[in-house]
Every structure is written in structure tokens, then in C-alpha cells.
Length: 315
Ligand code: GCU
Image (cartoon, rainbow, N blue to C red; front, side):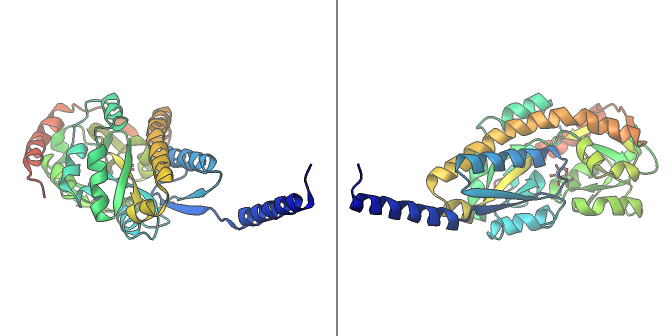
């Protein structure tokens, strides 16, 4: 039986709890993403957000901004760095601009198969490298797959490496990417993804290189219908978080964020594998031609770049 004093105390506690629950707003985690909400990485981010919210009773709310709404990858990386937003996905070449060591995990033909890449990305081999960027104001929580990239062109197909001679092909913004294209005999034009479609359409570029999902997602088959399966790059897409934000949350929450991010890597591989064929089929349906090429000469042309980069002294 409650006495009056106890009842009063209980009532005060309940009222206190109700008001504080009412006034606790979830901490927002803004995530910049440069592709659409149909992309497997978008679904992986949703998985990350749902679990983080469920496992903290709604303490965190992950808001994903697709289609470069918060800027291209280079801009979003800077926003994460200075703490203006909390997270983003950026392709490995952009992080390589901060630390050359990253170029090694994004070299042409460095992974022998998607399974090889999955084994590496779901292990802890890269953890130390990923933590090392904290000195720049961000950390890498893990790496999503972005499949294998191939070259696609506007007017004439690339059937062999000789066909690439002098062709202006858009690449991601890093030295390694520019060098990779010149090793293959073409001209690498660095540009952010959002500009590629128009640049091909207007003839500023002869083509670009990317994976089948992005090719279909961004409808680039409309402007560059010849997709030559060079499969020259399996570049990591890095899930990054602001160090300022990470250190502002309790240690237990930091651990949870890291663990859920790790789990989302496995999920993304599954979602990627489930979508890849559909994207290829869609592009074909819309008129794209997929061309099988002998990848050996492409592989050989990139050997020197691999050797040079592996020998690059630490900076
Ligand atoms: C892929 C990759 C992106 C990257 C893009 C690009 O779509 O998943 O992270 O931005 O290629 O070529 O810029």
C-alpha cells in the first residue's frame, strides 16, 4: 500500500519522466549521398539508420540526403570534416587525396573477384587504415562495394584497348584515376559524378567509366550506349563520419554506431548482388550494348601504375 507521501513522489517522478521524454529530441545524423534512393547503398544506409534508432530507443535519427542534395562527394567530405553534417559516402579516390595509402585499396585490378573484395571489406584488415583519417577530422566506418567499373562510350564502342586511344573519359577526382586512364591510352578527365551526363551529351567527353548500377541509375546509357566490360576497377565506397560528432556522443553509442555500420557492409553486398543483373537488363532494354572485351591488355597496361604506387613513400 502507498502512503500519501509515496504516492506524491511517484506522481512527481512520472510527470518528470513524461515531460523529459516529451522534450528529448532525437539527435539528427545527416548523411550525404550522391546517388538515388533506388541505389543499394541508400538501402544500406536505411538499414543503418533503422537499427541505430531502434537500438537506442529513438535517441538518433538518421536522415539521408540522396542525389547530391548536400553537394558532390568532395563538398560533402568537407562538410563532414568540419562537422556541418555527420556522415557521407565518398569514393576511395577522394580520401586518397588526403592520404595516398588509400590508393592501394582502389588500384585497378587489385581485387581478383567480388568475393575477394567482400572478404576484405567484411574483415578487420583495414580497420587501422580507416581510423587513421581521424587526424583530418573524419573516420572511415567501413567500405561498401561499388561493384566493378567498366568503360562506356558515346559514338564508337571500345572493343580493344587500342580503341581507347586519345578518348576523353571522365574519371573520379584523383591523380591515380587520371594516371590509370593514360596507362590505358586514353585521357582521364576528372569531374564530379553529377556533371557526367551533360558533359557526354554535349561532347565534352567521349565517355565515362562506372559500374552497371550507377550507369543505369543515372540513365547514362542514354548518352553513352556502348558499355565495354573492362572491369578495371573495384573501387571502395567509404562510409565516413565526422570525428567531431563521433567524439560528442557517449562511448557506448560510438561502439554501437561502429558495429551497426560494420553489419551494414554485409547487407550492402547482399543488396548489391541482388540488383546488379537488373541494372544491366534495364540498360539493355533501353538500348545499351554490352561488349565483352579481352581484359588482359587492360590489366597489363595498369601494371606499371600498381608497381609505382606500391613503391610510393608514405606522406
Ligand atoms: C560510383 C560510386 C560513387 C562514385 C561514382 C563516381 O557510383 O559508387 O561513390 O561517386 O561512382 O564515379 O563518381
